[in-house]
Length: 164
Figure (spheres, rainbow, N blue to C red):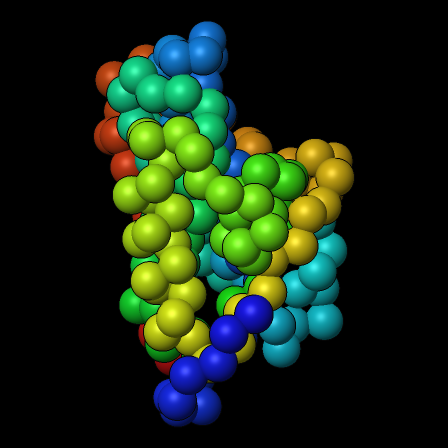
């Protein structure tokens, strides 16, 4: 967790996932963002306030997982978040972001650095490992990207909250 000066923007629960059909193989990233002021913000089945479903081409699963985190953090920042709470089923990413594990894979170092840099812009952040069963929304968004692209659809679909 880290702190930095900032405003009074919203806080988000962020769930992300990556998928690779084959390792490496066709890969994608999914992310679901939930405002923490919602009563169901921590419900694994809740409908997200914002989401990302991105096809990434041929990548490894770990690259897909990290890309989901990076893109979700960028979206949270763009939505004005001052606080994020990552709930991830990737223990590797949770431990590396927290500084408890080193990043050894050369493909992951730039993604880790980008995630850490974006995290420094939030007043507060946490990263918690959760069971895969609690990450079904992000998993579905990731797999949807591979299926959608294979059917000729857009590589990326980002849904933002409606402006009030």
